[in-house]
Image (cartoon, rainbow, N blue to C red; front, side, top):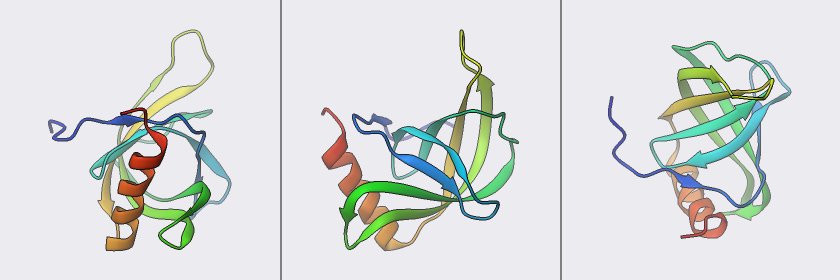
Length: 111
């Protein structure tokens, strides 16, 4: 499926947690209302659904985290690193979460 929106690279480190299994899932690299890309220390299962919590450095729209349901579409090893890039399609997000994603893009991208 082709991406409709241009991904926005962040200038702020944002940790992403796996709310089902616990622990840090990775670090957010870029995001749109439709999807996101993470840098992670482990290979992520593709075609699998995850509940993610983006840990914000400050409150946006009243909360310091963004809760998203996402499907991992691809995962590949980063060159010269023992880490992985993983791309996700957002499949479940509340109106609040989408407003927070918009605020995140406005605050933490260089556009």
